Image 1 (cartoon, protein in one colour):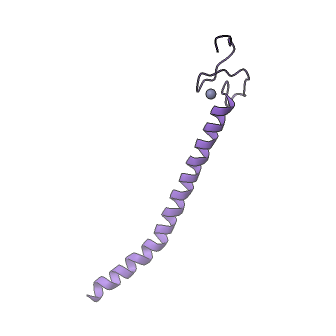
Image 2 (cartoon, helix red, strand yellow):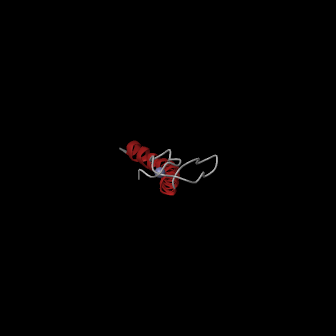
Image 3 (cartoon, rainbow, N blue to C red):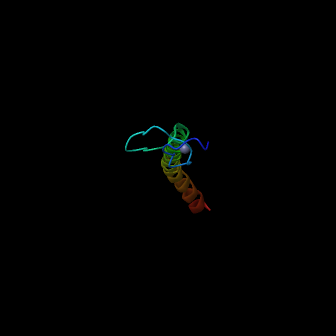
Length: 74
Ligand SMILES: [Zn+2]
């Protein structure tokens, strides 16, 4: 698009004629959606990790006590 001389998206360098505020600045809708998707994925991963950690803590304690019982019975 050689006819476009307006501001460009700071993320993909594509045309972005609309200022999206102090957070996004000149970022096109596609890149904002991409960023928000990535943020959501990161949040999901963090939640999954926390969930896994609390679960392994729960079951890990059970497992270790069972293992130590078996080990002492031998
Ligand atoms: Zn963009």
